[in-house]
Length: 353
Image 1 (spheres, one colour):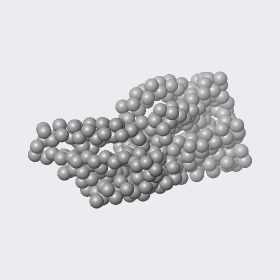
Image 2 (tube, one colour):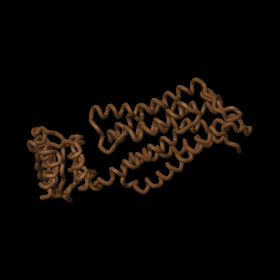
Image 3 (tube, one colour):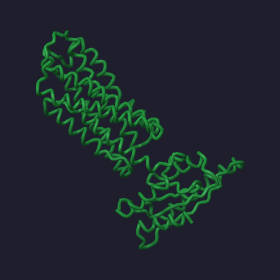
Image 4 (cartoon, one colour):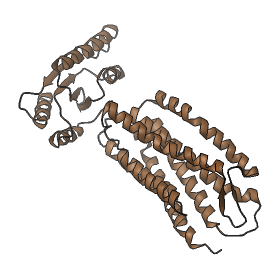
């Protein structure tokens, strides 16, 4: 079988994407317990759609300009799988980024229900297209011939690609930078590959997705090293990261709280997650001691938060006298002319005393 030059780039690109994503999925499966269930599921689906797209698209380009005498239905299958997997892959990127930003599965399910209708409609159209060619056809030489309806599908594909960027900008505007989650290393390779595919006779979409998945995996690794698996908060190692951010001016800490407890039940974890603002960072520095850093400079706010958490735990202790939380709370405020880094060091020293 002679493969024309214009197909070689795509075939190599898709082969690399398939091998890279498959290897990444194999490696990532070893760390499954370290990821939350929903994130693991979405990451797995992203990998699967990327591999399906790479395999079907690469095989389709391998057959370009090959007159093998196949019937129309057989010629249509591979391009249909490639285009549908692209659409589904972009849809999964939208869902994944929304979940990683807001970390709310209820919200993500709502977003999924809102955006899945075009997937269902176009999925049905791809099946119908196998018999009618209403979106595209593949001629005897395996050359792709699109109709006007196919470009409507492309609009939705790129709409799914742009929506996560809008979601991220909206999140950044309302909540600030998302810690340990940077969208640009994921968006840039996928966007470059999409533009390259749009403006050339080649296809590099799967390779762009694969590179983006690699960056996701590295972000996982960066986050895991600071995890405290028992509480879901940060571990003691994270304090060095806090100091580095304070030193580099990436964070400007003004207040802190020290929690000392008899034990750390799930109820205390839930109380802290519910009451502590999103910009607060909780670190487990000892078995029964937690440390909270915040950028809030309002002393009234930190005092109110301290009292609120203490009230919640006292209420729990009254109904669980056999295993009380028995929480002691101390708060610390940054002194005048004290740098953010010095404040972190002083608070850590006080907490460890």
